[in-house]
Length: 474
Ligand code: SF4
Image (tube, rainbow, N blue to C red; front, side):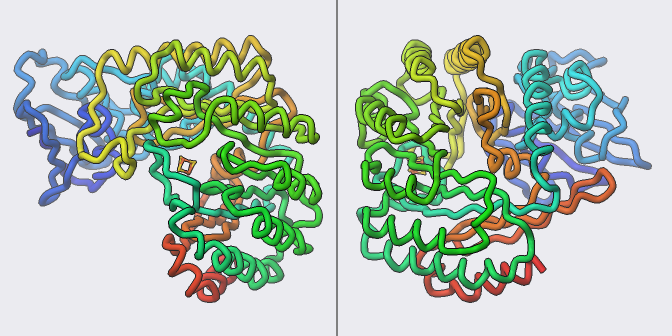
């Protein structure tokens, strides 16, 4: 058992994140001590005393030289970050491991890039590998350029339809399989439209972007889809948007009629996501479509005039080698979509892939991931794409990132507004998270307002949810 004793502070979560990254085991907090179920016994103390953080090995790691067992020199950082940074360095020395993003285990590395002066600072302070520090800076500059195009006081709207035709094996979202809930879909659409009707007239902020995501919004049948899209666009609040995006997502839900419905209300930006162009992998992860289905939908959307198409790929899908991933990416690049988003597989506990508490990663898996992501970066940069938004999820293989690449000028503003935590977001639908961002003299303060996740309960309590949102934004 590895135990981490905290003294003079309660920064459990950041320290659990670091322990989880190194061990692949989800730590437990018992009587104010972090316990990690690993085969080696060790005790580490993380102490905050008179404003000074120190970390040292109390017991265990017999081979670790004495000069490596204590860290007391600290950077000028908030204590929670300093505790995390020191634990990262100590475990890195003790276990002989390092990770590409170093001590940056949070969701938004570009936020930290904004706080330091240069790439080297990310490496020196947080042990971020040079290529990732470069990626963070490059992306941060693109993010800032996108944010410049938006009013700091603007609002960005998300509408979520948490249903999919089948559940992908790696999915950790609150996605419900639509075929089992068909009878629920009309009431769910009605509830969302009702929520918008109650909330939108009372929000006195300019809405700049609208993103309809999921799940898979195109899982609705054509009649219901038309009712939903027409209902959404009947609101004056959406009459002067800078950008509208619909996640058409799964190719097995896209029809010519649904694309016509989108085009008729002026939507030119959609996502069509194969995740891989290997049919064997698609079958393995439970996506009931083929690479050919994706190619057909992509071609149809281009012919119909959708000018910005995003395509998602996932590196690290089960059973895939780097050859399959690189082949998928090369074939997608040849199609020249405006946006390509490369995700690193996250071994989320709630997914069908990962049911246990142990998320260990094999050396071979880590090397494969490195190869796939560096191929993505070099291939996409050579093809003229720039990384314009970036975020990390917990439990990705090797602690890697998800990156949105785009052809210059085709960035999705909503993605940047949402992921940068620099703009307010109003969410509709079950499980949506609204947030208010307060930009105060260089400081960013974010308040969040969650919505009921269960669609049945959401339908029942939609009026209550609407009231909650209205008062949240007042
Ligand atoms: S399409 Fe996306 S949201 Fe739906 S099941 Fe697959 S991963 Fe989950």
